[in-house]
Image (cartoon, rainbow, N blue to C red; front, top):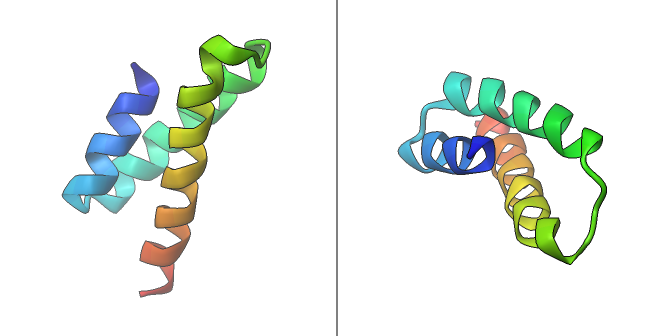
Length: 58
């Protein structure tokens, strides 16, 4: 659910909300064992990180 929030905020261009959600999702994902069931969430989280870095440069 947190990853969905960060994706939504980033897509809407809300940098601050996306940063907060990205940080929270990163902390949560670091506590969960990575396996096939978390692969999509990990990929979406990484994609948002890339987008946020691009948004930050603007």
